[in-house]
Amino acid sequence: MSEVMPFANKLILFFQKVWEESSGECLLQIQLLVALRNFVVALGYQSPICYDILLPILQKGIDIDSPDELNLLEDSMLLWEATLSHAPSMVPQLLAYFPCVVKIMERSFDHLQIAVSITEDYIILGGSEFLSIHASSVAQILDLVVGNVNDRGLLSTLPVIDILIQCFPLEVPQLISSTLQKLIVICLSGGDDQDPSKTAVKASSAAILARILVMNTNYLAHLTSEPSLLLLLQSSGIPTEENVLLCLVNIWLDKADNVSSIQRKTYGLALSIILTLRLPQVLNKLDQILSVCTTVILGGNDDLTEESSGDNITSSGSLSKGTIPSKEFRRRQLKFSDPINQMSLDASVRENLQTCATLHGESFNKAIGCMHPSAFSQLKQALKMA
Image (cartoon, rainbow, N blue to C red; front, side, top):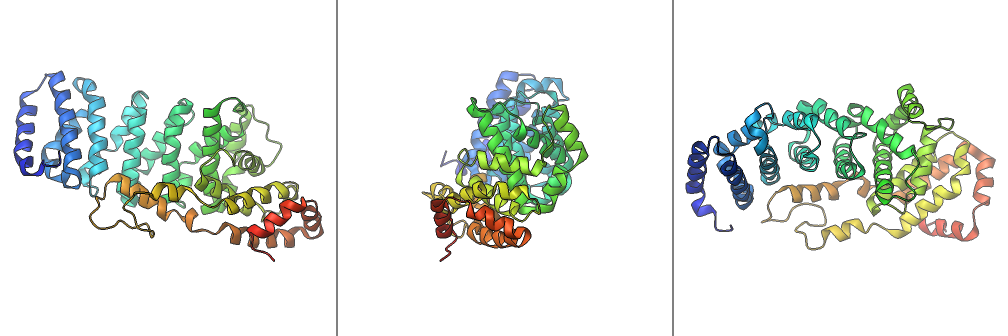
């Protein structure tokens, strides 16, 4: 496969000829789609040289309105995903195919994993151009999936929502508000104590909401006070006496041990923002909030070191020369450029503790005075206070 380039043009002619002659031969066409996928992977970032034959074949295979093509759908989707993964840049034809994902998902969730992967490819490769054209389709897909698939399906979908919000923190949250409301319902529902996959779904959903609080603070405050959310919570049998944002705080405190270190830092940053609320209940949770933030600060961030070992990415997150700009590298670049990584949790906690003290005066001093001496000394160590 590494030696495919000298034969690329002959192979392209071969694929074209056999495809034209294979009309109605379903099994042969499936074999051709598999071979084409291997060809695209072998060509890597040079794969656009075969787009003239590849894209029409792909377009036909992902069109579910054509009954003959349903047998080819799964292999066509795998070819689609490989094409996007190895594309050096987005091209208009590929950009135009995205609404097919919506149609496929509306029909059934049989191909959920691959559809989610394709959606992620479009976000990472297409960027703001993709979002400006297909925002409503993205919102539709997420709304279809969240609340209607099992925990395994949700766990494959939540990272895509997180990437979307990381890339477009100001634009995306209001576009997907109904999906985010469902994530709040997931977070505030009980029943995950004995079920690891439910715990993982709840913890990851809570991390997405924490990211929004950190990157678009006013929006999460607005979303949690929406009448439509309160109705949704009531219809789901979740009591709504307490402020919804404070209910989320309980989840961030409770699930801090169930998440990756970047998610834990996001929890910490969100909790430090909670310190600035003018709500007296914040003081009741002050001890726990500071305990989680202290643990996160002293624990450091091991995610990036784990990820970067053996990668061709420099410490600045840029690609070193000679590497292929494939999906994997773009994804890792995104991880390195995540604003959460650039933020200082200890600076945030220091600053927001000051605000909290100013807001609550003597009550704040009382709450700090109730902290366990060893916890207080760890806090001082974490915040580098004398």
